[in-house]
Image (cartoon, each protein chain N blue to C red):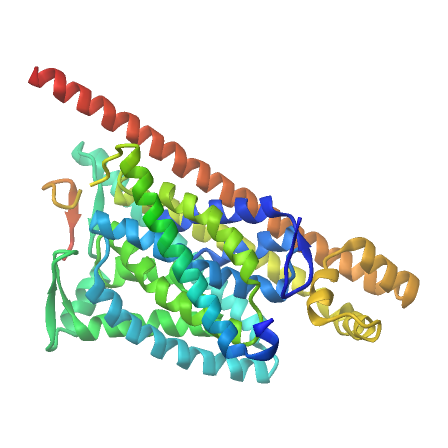
Length: 53
Length: 396
C-alpha cells in the first residue's frame, strides 16, 4: 500500500526487509553448520598456480 | 497459489522457490546476480514482466548478503578492491545510462543493447574457453595439475601503465593494486552495465580476473560484495517506480538462501580454473537467451501497441496487461474474437514460442549448472572425508 502513497517509504521498506531477512538467513545458516558440526574454515600452495603478475 | 499485493496476480509458490534455489547456487558459485537466468524463467511461470527485473534485483540484495557472508569466512572478499571498483562502477553506470537514454530517444536502444551484449558475451566466453584449453595443454606437457591462473598480459599492462600513486598492497589477493587501475576497470565494467541495463556481474567477474589479475575465487567473493551495493541501488530505483513485488522477492530469497550455501561452499572444493570453465559455459547460455529475446522482439511491433490500447480500453491495469500479454487463451480471445485481427495473433504466437523457448532453455541451463555444482560439492566433501580418514589412519 506504501507503493501507492509514498514511493520513497516503499523503496526504503523494501531494502530494509531484504537486508534484515538476508542477514537473519545468513546467520541461521551459520548456526545450522555449527549444529551439524560442519567445519568450513589453493593459491598459497606453490606450484599449483600459474602466476603471470 | 499466493496473491501478489502490488501486481494483483496469483502466482504458485514452488516455481519462485525453485528459481530462487537454482540462481542461489549459480550466483554463490560464480559471484553473479543471475538476472539473465531469473527474468526469462519468471516469464514462463506467468510472473508479470514489468515486475520481473525489479523483483529479481530486490531478491538479489538479500542473496548477495548471504553469499558474501560465506565467502567472507573463506577469505574470498577483498573489501579495498571492491570499494574502489564500486566508485568507478557507479560513475560508469551513470555514463552508460545517459547513452542508453539517448539510444531510447532515437528508438535504437533494444537492437543496439542486444547486439552489444551478444558480442561482449561471445568475446568473454571464447576468451575464457581458449584460456582453459591452453591450461589443459600446459597440464599435459608438464604432467602437473593447474588449479588457477593468476594475472594476464592485460592485467600486467594495466597495472604497469597505471602504476601511479596511490598503489596499495591487497592482503586478500596477495598482490599490489593501483587505485587508478581499479577505478579504470570499474568505470569500464560500469559503463557496459549502464548501456546494457544489467547488474554487470557477468562482466565484472571476468574483468576482475583478466584485467585486474585477481585470483578466481577472490574475484567471485569480491564481486558478490559489490553486488550487495549495486543490487541495493537497482532495488531502490525499481521500487521508486513501483516495479517491485516484495512478496515474490522474499519467496525467491527463501530458496536462494539455501541455494547460496551450496554454491558458495562448493567453491571450496573446486579449482579456480574449473569455476572459469563453468562460467564460460554460462556466458554462452546467457548469450543464447539474449539471441532468443532478439528474435522474439521482431514480432512485437505487429501487435503490441494495438493490443495494449485495446486492453487499456477494457479497463485492465498495467500490471494485469503485462501478465495477460503472455497468456495464449486470453490473447486469442482479445486479438481474434474481440479485435478481429488474426494477423496480431499469428505474430503473437511466434513471439510467444521464441520467448517460451528462451525461458525453458534458461530454466534447463540453470538446473543443469546447479546440478553440476551440487555434484561437485558432494564429490568434494566425500574426497575430503577420505583424506581425513587416511590421515587419521597414518597417524594411528
